[in-house]
Length: 545
Image (tube, rainbow, N blue to C red; front, side):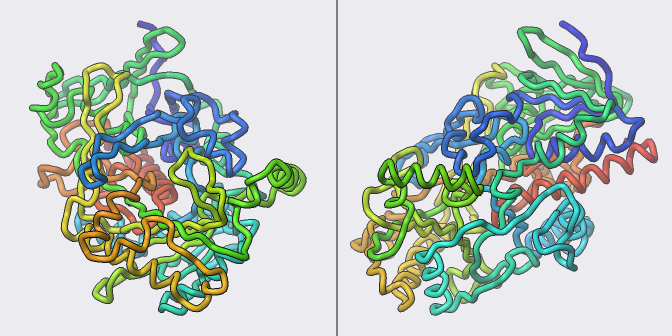
């Protein structure tokens, strides 16, 4: 075994949170940082072209190629479950939507943890400090930060009509989803710079990589954490990893920080003897810390993709349906970094209530000027749009569990979608609301006809069945190392993101969310890393890790 050296901090995972942390922690010139990433550099051309996510998901160069367990709530279907395996992590392959969620999300975290610093008013400055917003600084937005936020570079008549129709059924237009109340409809803001994807590797890691106190090792697979003992109990002292055909050991003088995401972080904890004791023993791993919450509390946004045929309006199905159209699209992007190749997977968004009893919007729409049977299949040969709607606050819970003591074997991922009556009710209500929007006057000139799931689904039971047939992941896994009070037996980290029961170890990524945010989860993860960096630096300053 070779030694990779000693560092003040070791960061495991060069994804969204890892890139932010590497940047912030290396601002202290006296602190040395090792960042270890299993994937490679983000130098694949399709990462940077927005539409290139189609070439990155399902590609072993950029994706972990996970799949879920067969899900009873989806009629026994298993889903592909993309997670970025490249510098920038899932920010290199996601939909680029800049979304914070709702103020109540963070106030709920603060209440659960007993730590007021997680409240909306307290985390808003963290969102602002990393932001470079297209309209400049304001009480809600920041300017000059690393995380570029721009308006999308194109619009569509069909999407504008959908927005008008939504307004006609009581969903108002809004200029900004990110002020704490995302109610209404608008085109999404995106993490792009002049029509090119802006991932966290470019935003945060590239500037930090010039600092002599940062070491980046890519193509390195972490096998397990090194857990020793101290007078105060277990302590993480570093990592064992493999790269370039060599097994390495690295030592952390101060902290090891796990930033492998909602799938990778709990998996590595379990492989290292931190998790539910019975599960670990089942796979021949001696439990070092019996932590039954590790891998539990898995939450995701299940999207219901409704497809409607239309007439007399431009959609991407027709534009990309022939060679000449595809050539025109390519030329438009090559010359101007605009047109369909510059667009996020979803352009128009809307936030609404599934029923009047909801205090805040509990549904999110991603509306697309295109349609296809499922991801990876060709666009339909007829003009159509997709109105994808998800339940923002699902009550169903899944889990991530190691399936083997082999660190290279993927974990078992079970989502348990639609496993609660509440989620099934919201799904049925969401389908009804979508039909109501499409039936509004603003869309009638395009003669919309429901193609999926189909108008024959009408009763409550039929709508639930429809949801099970068309539902799919929107790739927002969170919650599997959730934070909470130290007295909570299912909490994995405390409000400082320190692993309960193990010194010198933190988890900093979307897995720490006790409840999923009401919207896309990438930028909340940036904020979590910003907050963690402050916590860590405060401990370093006072020498109290």
